[in-house]
Length: 264
Ligand code: NAD
Image 1 (spheres, rainbow, N blue to C red):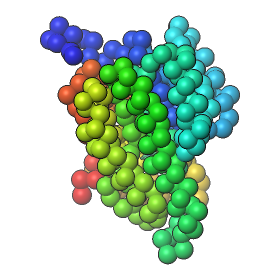
Image 2 (image 1 turned 30 degrees about the vertical axis):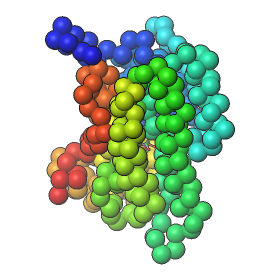
Image 3 (image 1 turned 60 degrees about the horizontal axis):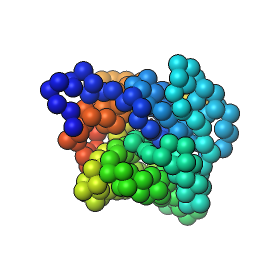
């Protein structure tokens, strides 16, 4: 628990052990870098190509540290158990979990294929549940931990004109799961919060821009009172805050960082 004497150390994560799913690109990469910059070691969890994550881990370890990359599909229970066992074997503990991995498969509701609906829910919701469960058990044993789920403004509002009901539903469910786990695990000294970003420029959004180059000016920026979309760096501070002692009295919170998009 932070005391008055500790103000300067509120954001210090030195020696903390963090897991970031989908941590090698986009938002996850920035969050891995930010946690490491504040002293944490990071297990970078990736679904497929491990090379990018290995390179990032080496970068994070430049001045010492024990970050590493590990392959796991968050929607696959056996993969998740193997990943948690590897974290336990290497570190013997887990202080911070960032459930960042997520996918968007757009499409109109009336013709949306059931397999895409299930795939979206499987990665975005089951994945958060499975990884929280596996890492949460370690946190329960050690009686401490901070979990941050990457939700979305799409868990609060319906994006337009692009339609992706499955994604929106998955993120709304992540917000509710955040509150459920915060409530159940408070007795184990585990805090569970969500970060709900607005439109952020990443590989994911760049894919949309390729087909719809005007979407930022026509829709995404227009929606935000700050009249622009965000960068991955603008999410980093919120996650460092939620991860560490600065947020010791904050749990079950859905922290929105969206340039005011959901204000009106
Ligand atoms: P991204 O596609 O660049 O990164 C997603 C990462 O998740 C990738 O590394 C991908 O490999 C990984 N991933 C996907 N499925 C996985 C699986 N089954 N197992 C393990 N890893 C898997 O996307 P991003 O824009 O960086 O998004 C990161 C998170 O932020 C997502 O949860 C997304 O929904 C959320 N988000 C993004 C925005 C935005 O505007 N970019 C806005 C709100 C919320």
